[in-house]
Amino acid sequence: MPNPATHSPATDVIVVGAGLAGLVAAAEIADAGKRVLLLDQEGEQNLGGQAYWSFGGLFFVDSPEQRRLGIRDSHELAWSDWQNNAGFDRPDDHWPRRWAEAYVDFAAGEKRAWLHGLGVRWFPAVGWAERGGQGAGGPGNSVPRFHITWGTGPGVVEPFERRVREHVAAGRIAFRFRHRVRGLNITNGVVHGVHGHVLEPSDTPRGEASSRVVVGDFDLNAGAVVVTSGGIGGNLDLVRRNWPTERMGPPPAFMVAGVPKYVDGELQGLVQAAGASLINPDRMWHYTEGLRNWNPIWPNHGIRVLPGPSSLWLDPTGRRLPFPNYPGFDTLATLTHITRHEYPYTWFLLNRQIIKKEFGLSGSEQNPDLTGRDPRLTLRRATGKVPGPVQAFMDYGADFVVRDNLRDLVAGMNERAGNDLLDLATVEREVRERDMQLANVAGKDTQLALARNARALLSERLIRVAKPAPILDPANGPLIAVKLNILTRKTLGGLETDLQGRVLRPGGEVMPGLYAAGEVAGFGGGGMHGYRALEGTFLGGCLFSGRIAGRASAAAL
Ligand SMILES: Cc1cc2nc3c(=O)[nH]c(=O)nc-3n(C[C@H](O)[C@H](O)[C@H](O)COP(=O)(O)OP(=O)(O)OC[C@H]3O[C@@H](n4cnc5c(N)ncnc54)[C@H](O)[C@@H]3O)c2cc1C
Image 1 (tube, protein in one colour):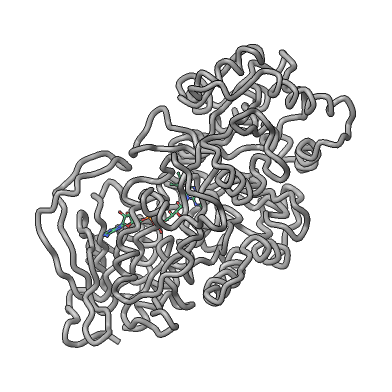
Image 2: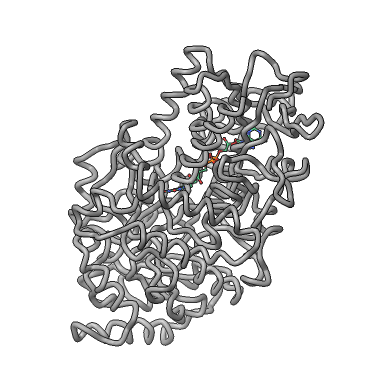
């Protein structure tokens, strides 16, 4: 119910955060004929938020792309995977679980047709993120479900930005950039507006940190407020404060930031302080394969390797990480293994033959072929050359060592790490033992068995999983070692919301006038992923929850 005392006739709904969730919510509200103010602390050049930088991977279930590759997926299989992955086990998981059910219905139902209708298209080879590897009832995807958008992240943002700009032209949506919300306006328990600081104009390029100099204040009122301010991954202090030390060991001393600095999590905390329920803050989705970007955009910029399954994963002393900690199999298990052992970093050991097929780099700017929708460049992925962005990391990356023989490689790794923790004999034994298992078509090495299994799928064989071959064979060289850092990315917990996106108070009562969507709401409900993500479910979670909160807030006025 709008509060008649404060409802400004000029605006029906205020949306805070012009990332993907905010754009979707604003477009839906304006489609319903209501007027929107869309606020963001950044300048217009950052429209689309993190989604612009994303790889554009989307989780679909039983899609035409999957069927064309002979993949048999189903709602039943996806929901079973989701539950095994999420591990919902708390009383607080009531709304997260209900959001998860609704989201899997969406991903197996209208999601693809809706986006297709808006002009979005996908690369035909479906990726297999989070392979699991611990059996049918364990975490992970049973089949490939990661559909990369043609145009990557910008291709996902495009139709929603277009809709929003059309509404701006028609006078239904107005932007307020450089408006940093610092609190909610609440009268008699009803949320009816926001206040905060106006920041000085900034022309720093997209993604770079912008000034926080305050040049004024604002106070805006409306019939409802939708918060879409993103997660906490750019605020390493907050990540460390929320770190689940009991469950996962101490937070890493060193991390790289997988998201821009504006993903600061501050508004989430302010909304909680104003009376909202914030649940599952200890659930986060960080990666174990972070590279320091040789060409950084935001501070401490890290790039995530989306690895194929063949690299050897070594601890700082050169010993292989134990099962199931293989590249791309179970992110949370590997992260927990690393943090419990307090490894400051780990290593991938591989060679040229593996890197050219198995090193995906996440991010729109790391995939100019797909982002630029360039068929000729994209086809080169199947030609067996090292992709340009990967070659640039091999040439300039601070975490890469490339050498012709193992002795020199190990010496280079010690030099890179600034210690002498690695000795040639240990590393050589690990690599030779693995290579010896290749004398027969089957052997006892689980990692090789899983790689062979993946190659049973055509798309995996063609562009994703290298043919099992000896790492030390000079024909497959040079040898490559990659020093891996923990990379912060997604916030899985968040503001607790019901199935209309209405924010709840602790105890479950609705906070009238307040809605939340996207990462700030744990992509719906306060954490629809539970403990782990099946991947490609974050952009989709923003689309789904942004649409729901937008429609519900408009309908309530
Ligand atoms: C490199 C990269 C690759 C990724 N790849 C994928 C992928 O392939 N698939 C997938 O599903 N997901 C991926 N993701 C994750 C996905 O992009 C994000 O989870 C999603 O875009 C979050 O959108 P959002 O709208 O919730 O928040 P954001 O995009 O973070 O937007 C929030 C906005 O709110 C603004 N804001 C914050 N606080 C305030 C305040 N106090 N006042 C005013 N404004 C404020 C911020 O400036 C920002 O513009 C990737 C992310 C990155 C960075």
